[in-house]
Image (cartoon, rainbow, N blue to C red; front, side, top):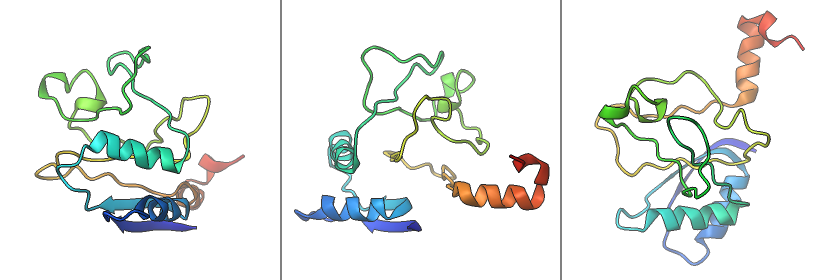
Length: 146
């Protein structure tokens, strides 16, 4: 399995098959070239369903509670009036973390997509968990004793 691959959107009938093949052979896929005028929620939902079971994880940003009627996507964006209420709407850096770490199940795949790019910054860094363990064992030996 490759750690990282890039894939560019193609308006081809077999593109979803290509997307799924690349996704299943990679830990991280940087996917670009999706037309700006596409109905992005429907498009990414179609890709997600091709990749496997679609799990909704939308929640109330203030409480973390899941609403009975969830949206397909969790909205993470800067909102100046809400920046002190939730990390999801703040402009602060986040420490290394795993999304969904406190759930009773784990995600095989998470989709992140951007509808408005930040003028400066806004990058998301991904690091392989195996590499995190290797680094911790090297520099923080007591941290990884099992």
